[in-house]
Amino acid sequence: ILNVEQSPQSLHVQEGDSTNFTCSFPSSNFYALHWYRWETAKSPEALFVMTLNGDEKKKGRISATLNTKEGYSYLYIKGSQPEDSATYLCASYSGTYKYIFGTGTRLKVLA
Amino acid sequence: NAGVTQTPKFQVLKTGQSMTLQCAQDMNHNSMYWYRQDPGMGLRLIYYSASEGTTDKGEVPNGYNVSRLNKREFSLRLESAAPSQTSVYFCASRTVYEQYFGPGTRLTVT
Image (tube, rainbow over all chains, first blue to last red):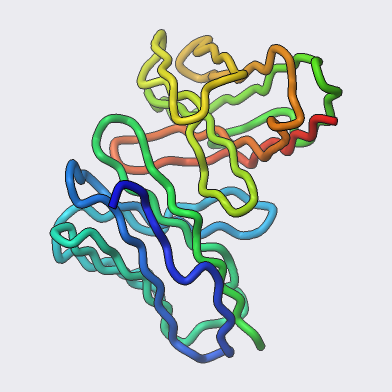
């Protein structure tokens, strides 16, 4: 994988459902994987920075895992709420000042 | 503490006009970035500045120039705007691990 790929592109879930999405990134020259939450008409806000294989991070109902050997990260949202509706971006950082962003997963939580 | 600020928020240009997008950060970060965001595409890096006095091209630098005026400020200049430069432009600054984004400038070139 040369680019950062996210799936699915978009999804709708019902309030209370749990959901997860995937970020695939180049496993060579890996330094860090970033997750951002991006609400419409706002700027991306950092959720997690992950560096170590097997890393797990958690913030409230949102958590993320990292597999650097196979080049993927999962983001989980437990008990989705309407305020979780946003685009979730991931970005791979190789330690050379440059980030490669995925195109994001657009989540819509229906009340 | 304002974080990363960008001006203007919105701008409409005619083809061939020039303008400068301003970005400033008050977090004493060394590295600063300019991205563009287009529908269906991720954030694409235009230019970055690893530290005061240095700038480097990113993925899509054609048609743009930058100036790292001092540690706080990093400006992006369009010398002769083209419709293909219609986009939302984000500035960011970076600590060792995290990037902090400005609110964006929505630019339309007609």
